[in-house]
Image 1 (cartoon, rainbow, N blue to C red):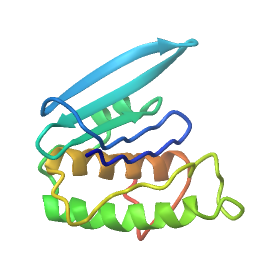
Image 2: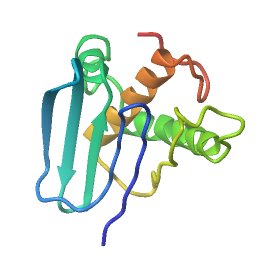
Image 3: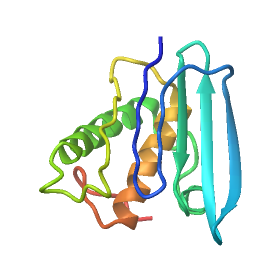
Length: 144
């Protein structure tokens, strides 16, 4: 059975579905003269795949995000639940919020243990998104 999550912001997609391994693959591709960052995480046991595609995110993650294990997994899960809830509210109101930023809802299940790496990347994408696109999803946004 596949569970699928999509976030499409400019060039972003987060997808949770079936996959074959538990690893991170980072790629950089040249697309129409602009660098495109791709981060992919897969896990066969939990049947998910996360793909984040957004110009500049991989560079931002490497240079400005706090290091892995700085936050606890519980902290990341809590923040992700709040960010995703607000994201989904905005995605469901295209007349009120920019539909180019919030194209689809995110199916993030707070009961599912996605593991540290998935929560770390989703959290950091949400921080990157809020700072880059001048949005405020919930509470104070860390400036990085």
